[in-house]
Length: 112
Length: 115
Image (tube, rainbow over the protein chains, first blue to last red):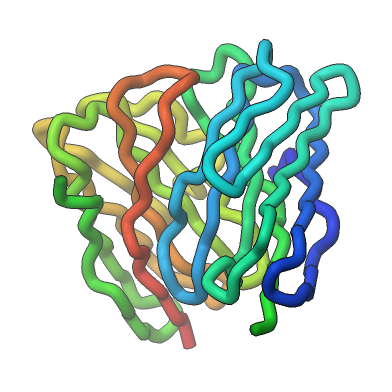
């Protein structure tokens, strides 16, 4: 079963704009991860945030985690056409040995 | 380092036929996962191995799906007999250890079409 719900399902922006994607989940987690999937390809890990962390940065990516609201957001700043992809949040439920439960994904389109 | 390898990349079969997918994880990765990704959805875990033992197969349709990881390295996933609803991309992933803080590395996937 899918634990995460992502919002929006699709997002279209212009190059240079910021993109924000949100993820909500249901159970207690050890960590939350974000992955990117380009059309027809495998998933690429972007960033991992642990349950005791509130914010994390990696290059143009900023992830926040609010465990009290069971939600996370991914911000991509100064987007580029190459950022066009589907973005998935994946939760690692507490004490389940690294198992990941993926959300439905947000399809991001960045127009040049 | 070499990534996760999967073959074949594409497969088309008729319903009720059987099919097998192969995965070679990153060298030294103890944990291996098989996911099913239906078009428009996120990946769903089918089975998780730690070395050659099964950790979680709670979402594997065991009446038709089977998987093994002999010698704790390569793995095969088999479907027999296939149904139309099995059309999906089958992704293999590996991670360094069984644990809750390690990222997973994904292969390119096998796109299965059942007609």
